[in-house]
Image 1 (tube, rainbow, N blue to C red):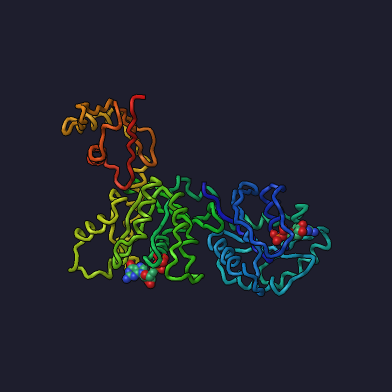
Image 2 (cartoon, rainbow, N blue to C red):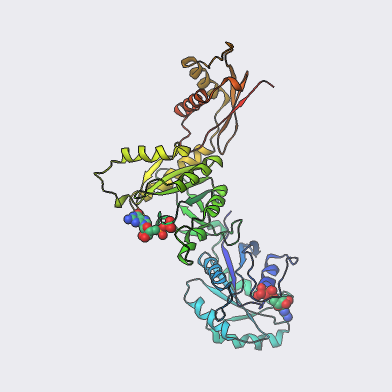
Length: 446
Ligand code: GDP
Ligand code: GDP
């Protein structure tokens, strides 16, 4: 289920994490006393009346300070805000409005996200109203006095908050396909991300990844009643990582391969971007190797196709050339796109659907054994020097994601690499498995 996100924003030490703990109903989480500590962004489920939402503490927002964390903190808050349905700005009622509160309020007014203003540390009801009134000056509407520690005033705050949240019934409840966009720097990953998330497709939500500030974006493709297709959600993994380099200058040798590896590990489908101008490099081969090793489905996006002199190569010649160098993922469909002109970008999610379906496909044992019988008839297993022949008794699919077929044989050693590849080719020819690795386990009698 996808929940609307509420981002909690404010300068350090105003009580953001105390408030998050209060609203998420768990009081045992650690509360830092230290100002300016960056925390992991964790999304916690919360509800008020019949509304469910997910609440995230953005870490302290600092504008007038040059701590080393500053860009990171701001980036986190920005990312949280860009995917939030609403924000709570927390201020300190005992301290009164500070310059930093004004700076944050100004910044928030430039964003389209609705904001409710929580004036925290107002333990006394009468005094609280007076303290809160001072914050009208921030220009964010009614200030709500609350005490995060005691829970006072949070009801009124939440009544206001939920008027800004979409009802969960409006959010579709389809299972997501986890998609990682990976490739070397400058191949066009962030341009493609923009093309994929732009225009009609709404960004529904974002949920934190496994690594700190790995931010996922969820994109919905609406269903089509004419073709009876249902809507589908795609979780684009670690979109912050894709955009990272826009904010931080890395040297030309920086590749971020570990970040790519982590994204691949979390993906069902990898959109593997290569640059049509550069062709396949050694780094591309490393990524291809990892995709296959981790058993992820993949689509190869050959980007910048607009920049290729079309009479130099045809698509077919070019595909052959690239596939040759990307033999680890030779099973992956290849599509020639341009993030710049948008050419064929609308086909990408179709391919994601296809390969995701193949990745989780299950084939019955009877069909597998038909294919095996046919394959053995055409080309019988090799015989070793002692005249002993390999025998395949039967096969069965033991796992999906990726499809894994166990073959029970008399002696795995009698099946050389050539024959194993032949059997795999037969499975692919007869059963498809486009875009997914296919694993064959050769099991002996004992
Ligand atoms: P954050 O940095 O904004 O996340 O602030 P914390 O939640 O870590 O709280 C900062 C300090 O304010 C801690 O010492 C909390 O105990 C204190 N605090 C938080 N909420 C309240 C409150 O409602 N009343 C009072 N008096 N203190 C609070
Ligand atoms: P990233 O590092 O992989 O995220 O790559 P970017 O999306 O930042 O793109 C790197 C450069 O390639 C930028 O100058 C883009 O404008 C350019 N670029 C991206 N996609 C295309 C494309 O389809 N065609 C052309 N000609 N240039 C592109």
